[in-house]
Length: 358
Image (tube, rainbow, N blue to C red):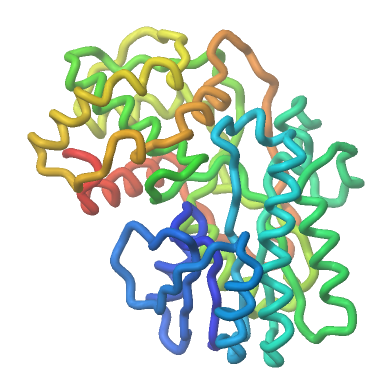
């Protein structure tokens, strides 16, 4: 399979991984569009674009009439990430962004074949209450307000009478490479660990009980996106996707400690969103000592401290959040990765990019 692929949102976790992956493949002409450029070098064509500006979207996207595939990963999150998940303004903004991307491009891209889009475990109401285990794609739509439904209904309507098809992926907790991303739990974990090390402290898990859940490597998502471009079994389907194993967040802490040469300590439940913004002076010294890329501390992790707190669940003992991936396997995508191996490999990417110290 080859063609001209347009990636919306390449500065984020999933979009960046998709850009790296397709940019490295032969015979793919890759165009990436977002407000901010990706935080890594690449060979694709990058076009700055604000998806809330309909007029500019129409002007820019009419130039991409040779598009055959679309990967849509763009996401708007409010600064208060958790509260934003229930905010009507956030839902309407995400719905409008997709319309502004797809309508102009669909109008000119007569050879369009496939669109990949994303939902997540919030489709099962996991942000409101623990879903039954395991969560399955075949269930009826969870009865709550969610921009996923706005986007999905729009895509289904837009597709009527068209030759292209779509695939929605529902990833579990996402691990990957990005800067200033709202849901970057890996970088929150790593910066927390590095600052604890600089303070001469052991690595203590800052959350609550070790509930069972799953993770997903963005590199695995990117490979699944490639599979979806050519698999008949992916046409107009929704799939859960995970690394293939189960985890607890406290269970990842020994791997994190070993990677940074730290001792483990007893759990210290705390709210990182309150504590970590006060540590800028420590990070600035670390960055200077190790000649790290000059990224402002507030742009490094951004609102992901709050997302980390949500997942680490300090003071709580949440029920498991587990999804079934049988449907994806039966459809033909079998790739997987050990989450501890993923953790080390992605930390090394951040170190190679000059974001984290050795």
